[in-house]
Amino acid sequence: MPVVADDGTPPPPSAASPLRVAVIGAGPAGIFAADALTRQSDVPVAIDLIDRLPTPFGLVRHGIAPDHPKMRAIRDTLHRSLDHPLVRFVGNVEIGTDITLDELRRHVDAVVYTYGAALDRQLGIEGEDLPGSLAATEFVSWYCGHPDADRERVESALAGARSAVVVGVGNVALDVGRVLARTAEELEPTDMPQHVLDALAAAPIEEVTVLGRRGPAQATFTTQELRELDGLADATVLVDPAELELDPGSEERAAADRNVSRNLAVLRGWTDHSATAGRVRLRLRFFRRPVRLLGTDRVTGVEVERTAVDGDGRAMGTGELEVVPADLVVRSVGYRGTPLPGLPVDERSGTVPHEAGRVLRDGRPSPGEYVAGWIKRGPTGVVGHNKHDARETIAGLLADAADGTLRVRGPVDDLVETLQAGGAEPVLLENWRAIDAAEQSLGATRGRARTTMHEREALLAAARAAAAAQS
Ligand code: NAP
Image (spheres, rainbow, N blue to C red):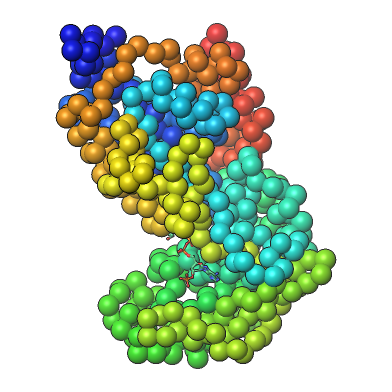
């Protein structure tokens, strides 16, 4: 218990009375933030890593495509940080439902918000809500086995679909296009839930069009992800050579940016592909902006307007319209942050206002509040970018602890006990280990390394079995 000095000032954190930090969101940003806190010894800390799901890893579990096992292997690294004795994983706890932000803040000395950007962005065009039209976030959540995925909605959109349009030319669009174009045999060894594998295997997809509203020089996908499309077992990538002709602004961009020039080289290598090879034609089309989705009972196509890019790379409509037939439309136009009740959010960017990771309220750093990851910088960058980002935030937190801005505020009840007393069911690391083991056992029944369990109740049942065995 911190001893309060005569002048009423609490002392700095000590081993007996460490700085209590709650990190909200156990995805890569949260785990890297916790890790940065454990890798220093200047400020004694105790960390509660809270997640609303009973499972850690955020987008590493529910975002990175399951056919990218090497990328998903980062969870082994993240797992090591969870194992640290100063870190306590507290899953299945939703801020605003199980505990308010104010209550949480009374239990800890500092909060680091790392809960990401889980919402989809919309196109804002007619027909967007027709059956058969999905957000990439919905499709990705479904194929990754997220407990909140709307199975019925996604599976009814996919059922019977022969032609799909994916709107957007970022890495998520490539993930979606690639997963749709893969054969059942290619997906079989992944950790996708069995119902996902079955639904994808049953979908008679023959044509996938990935649609860019600007040119190939403005696409945001990265070369490694693009190149991978050429290695699909039964799909051919098709590119129209006319769409690879560059205006002077795009030439300049290609000369200045190696990712752009490499993308263009890869795309040029595909212009002579034959449309008759393979079960699926995977078309990459550029200079087409969706104007509306067509159909009455469900989507039948996307009306697009041809575009050209101006000198600054902006898309300008030409007025020329055409229809791309589609039974399934997946808009992959970026993620968006959600406001947490009680936390300021910049509506335009969907991020929490901050200065080098210190949360700003009314333009001023709010003592004890920090932010890292996508909710800090917006939905860009790969998993590794969160490491540097989290380090910046934690450096600010530690500096605040060192100069006395952050203090240990007297004795408090244990957070987990408070949550349990309030009826919540926190899932701790040992419970998560039981879930992990259950997923591996489930996978083993089909000769796979693991199969993701997609139902919250099944996850909690595995966690409860572990808790019962311990008591
Ligand atoms: P993104 O890279 O920002 O791509 C969004 C795409 O949507 C862009 O092509 C954008 O075009 C387009 N778009 C936006 N609004 C549109 C509209 N109204 N109409 C038509 N097109 C529109 O985002 P993301 O693909 O969601 O990826 C998010 C982050 O995760 C990225 O940093 C990505 O690299 C990363 N990620 C990485 C991997 C990997 O490494 N394998 C996998 C998945 C995701 P404009 O450019 O014209 O706006």
